Figure 1 (cartoon, rainbow, N blue to C red):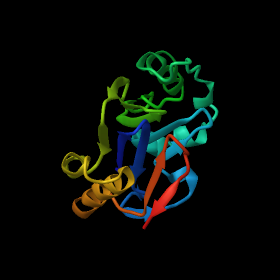
Figure 2 (figure 1 turned 90 degrees about the vertical axis):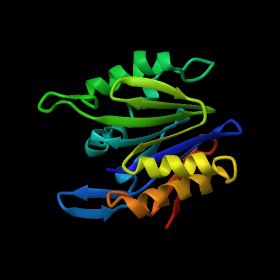
Figure 3 (figure 1 turned 180 degrees about the horizontal axis):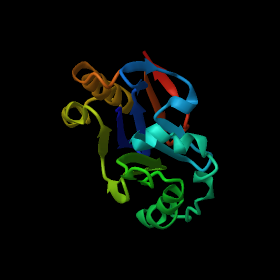
Length: 188
């Protein structure tokens, strides 16, 4: 499991994730794009994912899915996610696996100044900040206490480090991105 955290600040969505992957009883940290839990897309979207989505790595190996979204002039909406993105991901067996029945998948989606949480096929627009994955209780606590005191990346970094200190399935280095420049930043 992993942790992904995000916050909206001054018209930009900032997102961070740990880099730990597990295989059986082995824990590894990879800094290859295909193993990251955050993806950036040419249409301006950033997506962080945990759960079965990360196991399948659908988002990263199918970079051609996301650009097919027809995002209206007013930006990404719940309707676009429900009517376009979820059916595309369903076709890729992200939310339903024929062999395993329903799978547990959670994503945070940033686009411009909008932030959405998608869990299985349920979409929620987030007003301020959100966390998904392991150790979210610790990340939520940090976000609640420090969201007005720290700059966005320092806040996300602090939230993920709190999770990593308490949960063995979360560890750095930590990766950050925002909807303004969509460049990946890594902190050890």
